[in-house]
Amino acid sequence: MKTLQKFAIASAAAAVLLGLGGCAGMTAQERSTVIGAGAGAVGGAILTGGSPLGTVGGAAVGGVIGHEVGK
Image (cartoon, helix red, strand yellow):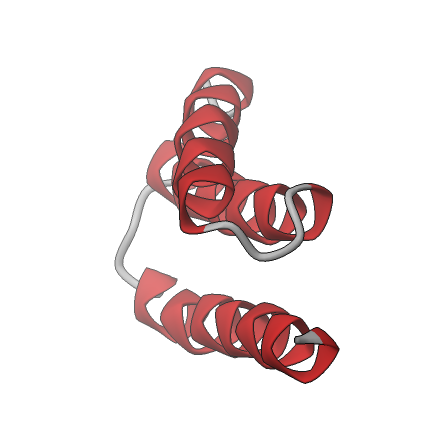
C-alpha cells in the first residue's frame, strides 16, 4: 500500500512539473492559479494519504488561493 501512495504522490508531482511547461503564454494571475492548484493537489494527496478526494479538494483550494494571491 505504501508503494501505491508513493507512486500517486510522485505521479502528481510529475504532472504538476510537466504542466508548468504550458504556462509560457499565461498571465501572472493564471500562472499563480495553476501553481496554487498543483501545490494544493500535492498537499492534499500527502495529507490524506493519496485519497483522490483529498487530491482534488487540495487542488481546488490551492487554485482559489493562487488566484487570489495573483491579483
